Amino acid sequence: MEGVVRVLATGLRGMVLKSGLTKEDVQEIRLRVGGPLIVNVKGQECFLTKDGKISSKCEEAYRVSRSEMRETVEYISNYSMYAFEEELRQGYITVAGGHRIGICGKTISEGGKVRSMKYISFLNIRIAHEVKGCADKVLPYLREGGQIKNTLFVASPGGGKTTMLRDVIRQLSCSGTTVGVVDERSELAACYQGMPQNDVGPRTDVLDCCPKAEGMLLLIRSMAPELVAVDEIGSAEDVRALHYAIGCGCRLMATVHGASLEELRKKPVLGELMQEELFERYVLLERKSDGCGVRAVLDQKGVRL
Amino acid sequence: MRRQGGFGPKGSAAVILKWIGSAIVIVSCGGMGFYFGAEVERRIRELRQLREIMFLLRGDVRYMRSPLPEAIGRIGERESGMWGRFFTSVAEELAGFDVPDFGQVFGRRINEIRKETALNRQDLELLVRFGEMLGKMDMEMQLNAFDWYLEQSGERLDKLVGQADKQITLHKSMGILAGVFLLIVLL
Image 1 (cartoon, rainbow over the protein chains, first blue to last red):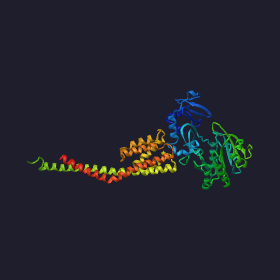
Image 2 (cartoon, each protein chain N blue to C red):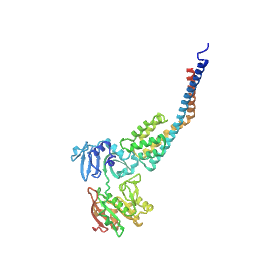
Image 3 (cartoon, rainbow over the protein chains, first blue to last red):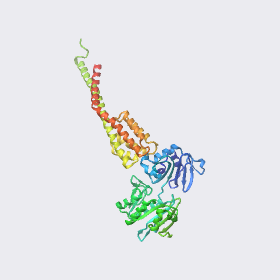
Image 4 (cartoon, chains in turn purple, green):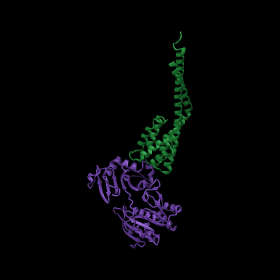
């Protein structure tokens, strides 16, 4: 847990460490200025008291101060807000270890677009979990006659898409497939100074912090991967890059936000993809304490396998 | 009337001692003058080295968007001597995430090298103020901070270089003259 909480203000760090919670237990830590210190433990919301005890009563919770929030933001940004301007515009920063921190405050807009953020008052620290072996059940469905199927992992936020995709990448890489990962948010491989902190296998090349669409083209040109993996696709640009990758003979694995296939069909860009049957497998996931609840594996027609 | 100790074995020993004493006074005072002259040269070297470091840091921040601990750590590895150690120590302290403000860490580490550096109080204050600007706000602000420091330190360096020859000669002459003056007073 120490690696995760080191980005918290020193006072808050002590409380979380005193609580005895482990990294495996905690899914989220939520900080709001003047609000209670909330920890999501195995899907259950808990409050942390000043002396590090876990409570179910909001009134007993420790209230996060403005100075603690400012200190935490300093640590999250590694004393360098300027280095995270792009991330700030998107509302999150990924820290060492692949933990994604959602950020809210007052936005500064310019020409109708978010330029930066000030008075940061709300943070959601999402703890990344590396669950080796969580893809064991789905992996047999993702290969047929030695060929990898283009696969889309579908789940709502926190449903374990990234965890599942990471393990699939690791296992395929270990079994001899050259994998190229475009890790736009540093969540899959959690690179620190270019080195993956998560195990993504021995035959995996990672393009860290790179926009997905551009990254896919770059990877295909430079590293000749057999499989390209990306997290959270959605834009028209992403789809164009996916088509290019398929055209180059690469196999694809991607994740997307969604609760069901019906919901995806209604989305303008993804709906078209589904009609084209670009993906041959859909893996529907659901939120579980270990982050890897497989609801169903479907083929390109949406038929359950 | 003969002065005591003027002649004879005791007298000649006293004369020799006087000569040795005089030589020590002249050499020490002259040495002090040469030392202060060398300090001016060292200050010029250090100012130049710091400006070079700031150019590199500016480039790292501007083009690589490296966070400060990372960029500063690289400078620490690259530079030798006191400034190399200084930047390494700043990077190490920042990595601990125990102090909430970059300027605080930077300022404290500057205080620790005050006795070691040839930079004067104003040079160091400039550096402290620069440190207080770093890490805050956006890229534009960072680059402005670097430009401000480079401009200010550049002006100081130009002024110093312009006066260096005079200052060095002055220190050396003053040292020797101070020695001669002391000799006259003592003898």
